[in-house]
Every structure is written in C-alpha cells, then in structure tokens.
Length: 107
Length: 121
Image 1 (cartoon, rainbow over the protein chains, first blue to last red):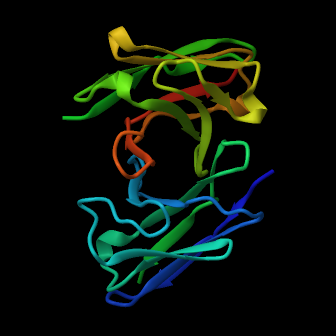
Image 2: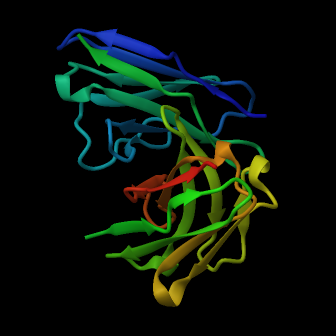
C-alpha cells in the first residue's frame, strides 16, 4: 500500500526555520497537500499542489518537492505555528492517503 | 459562510450500525465532490470515502469496503455515511470534508467540526 512518511516531531525556536518532510514510498509521486491541525480543531489546508499557498495562509509557509519527497517550510516560525502537520497525497488507485503527522514544537 | 456540520455520532456496541449526516451551507453543494475522513484519538486523519458531485462515482478505503456506504442528497445539501458491523477500531472523530474541484486547489478545503463515534460494549 502507498505510504507517506513524516518525522514524528520537529522542534525550533521562534524566528527560526522549520522544515517538515514527507516521503512517498513509490513513484510516480502525485501532488501533495499539507494540513495544519491545532488541538481540538479540524485540519486546515496550508499548502496545495506541492508549492501553492491558499489565500489567508501567511507567506512564511512555503512548499517544495524533489523526487518522491515534499517539504513544508515555515520561515520565521511563530508560537502560533505550533501544531500537528499532515501531508496528503493520492495513490495510483485514486485513493487519498495521509502521512503519520509531524508535531511542530516551538521552543 | 461556508459550513459543514456533522451529526449522528454516538456510543454504539460492537456489531452495531450508525448513520452519520452532514449538512452543507454557504456553497453550491452539488458542484463539489465530498469525503468522509476519520481521526482516531491521538492518531492522524484517515480517508474513509469519497463521492462525486453526481453521486455516481464512489470510492472507499480498502479496509472499509463492504461495511461503510456513502451517499448524498443534493436537493437537501446533505452527505451521509452508513456504517455497519462496527468495531472498536472504528472509534474516531468523523469529519465531513469538501474537495475543491471548482477552484484551483483540488484539495480538502473545508472541514466540518466532526462527530464522534465510539464503539464499545
């Protein structure tokens, strides 16, 4: 089955850059999407089609991709960015898959 | 305001059934494909099922095929999920989610607050 692998946790100090990776275990890699989830809230889309930022998402959020890995980068991390982040993509059968999630801690 | 509101969750015994509903408002429901996504306590989201705008194309997560059934009523702006032969591992918060097939994102762009399903004896 298609899997997306994320690091369980990333920790950065305020103002630093956080990078969260998502690796697919097979080719071809489809577009990836990123969601931010804060405790007690539903996920919120923060990046779509690897590199596109939805309206309302701060410019400090950016996305990139290389091969079977995509990366969500948060530049100048703020305390409010502390959350769980999930990548999502679609497998060859057209079924949606989520990564295991990365807990971003702002020290 | 674009909104999705789920209902129908609750406590059910193993082997039981439950029907979830999702009421949409603030957008043209029939123009969007819809999904159910669940999230077990302390776990990440898991896609459950999707249904096309017309309802003619339906997909399920492989592990749920045969027990869960998705449907929609565009005249009532509503999405449904019928869940049968429920197991403890089906315990989760179930989200109704819109997929943006109209705009540019092609993403799960609107999520409801979720309805909790607990399967326990």
